[in-house]
Length: 420
Figure 1 (cartoon, one colour):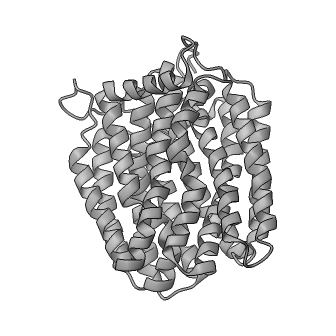
Figure 2 (cartoon, helix red, strand yellow; figure 1 turned 45 degrees about the vertical axis):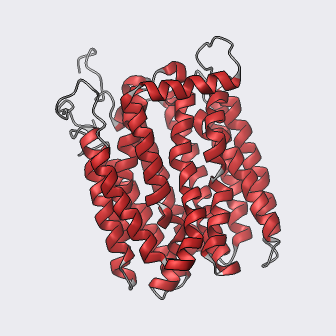
């Protein structure tokens, strides 16, 4: 083989995996995410069993993921100021300790609800501090040339963990053993701590002017506003997350009320959704790689709208699982496309802060939508709220013109295979 010819196509999945630091951090993150989704899945079911009310499910999920809404921008400032490796290890350590505390609390089948929400909130705060740093280190792990493959793989593992975690929690262990599940989640954080600690990579942020945290946060906002593509990506993901993704954490009552099922039904439908999401993420980095990300985002939004509307109308398990699977595919086709556009567009000098805004818009607004949507669901029903999310996705498909200003037509990437 010619030494001048790269072994893997630049930007491909194979190229990303050829970087040893990325392989280690990817594996550690995968193990940790499996534990996280074991816990997220079980928390939703536990909250439903504890009260039978959608508003309480929304409150618990907001405690887990809501801190991302308020703290991710400041987590982005931290990621652009301090050593990102130390931030990631510190955050995972806090999550380990408080997940163990949560496991002890729920040994009583009827724990204090305020204590439950409080412990979950601390875990959420640590996650919010970690996320911008974890996103910002990707170029250091693979280089800018191979970042698209790394994003695709990270999206895939995040969603495979949505399948593996619920299957382990729901079928292998049983969600009637929440303490054991939360203990296992605590142990999985050790994998990511070990990977980040052992593998050498440049975790120092770019040099900055010495401005204070608030000024640096303002600079991140200004950078996002100044770039048309970044601005539209952030608006699209924010509205999509807030209005269209309420259904994700309301699948437990959906399985019980609309499908007439039980915890097994919930496990099947949720896992089908997660499997679809993983396939959607992989598809963006493989056979859909020749489709311009801006076009793919619009296609994904329309497909999501149709599949979510179909899911909202189901009353039996099998067609509901199929609809959830398709919804997952289109959901992460959208998210992976948006994330790739953003990572390729943003400047390294403000990467952490802009990725903090991304986490705020994506991961932060989903639980806020669930918090607000929960009481509305108790009033008008699951079908109406799910259908509203589908309508919003159609509107976003019209809005989300994410081509750069100089692009008259969507572009195609080179013909090489993305898996090479």
